[in-house]
Length: 230
Image (cartoon, rainbow, N blue to C red; front, side, top):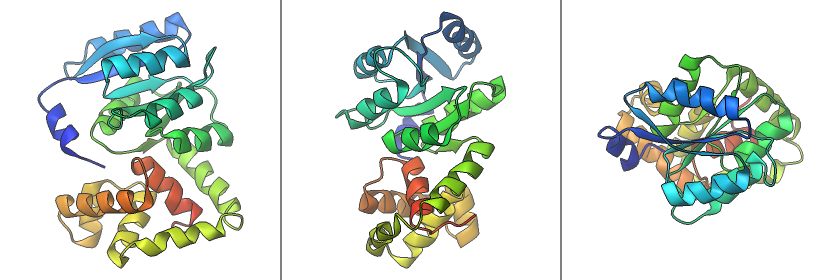
């Protein structure tokens, strides 16, 4: 959901918290981000537990979250941050070398707004941070393809989840389907002959009715209910 928070970011740098147990990885990310005028690194964490503490203290806009860490892994840290009152606006971008189906599904369902592999280039990482800060969701293309396959295979077991869509209007179902295909508000507006603001309103209403934290969770719902098919 692209809310007023996105508008506020137009007047200040995007605050980023880096979370990784490897010093060289954190240093590399910081060197990349420190030269960007619109991004400010506000802290670093080496464990999931520390990430939760710093997220509460620093209120970053985006958390770059590793998965495999001591004491508390990135999935559990993501779940804890997403469930913390007052941290709804904190967006979590999971960065990992492990792109297994379980990690992707668990990360998104825990509340992550995006998922990129650590072999992504600098431009892709910077784009990902800005996309999440603007309220959109982000998935690497090959992860998206496998996510579709995973949820397609689970569709029979999750058939009852289709009842969730009964709360949506016809237009909201159309918008949800396009969110599931990865379209932005502007692209949804163009597809349905709506203004981006109207498309954003429909996305917001669908999120509220379905109890989704962000667009990434709308993607999960769209796949699981069969609204989006591969």
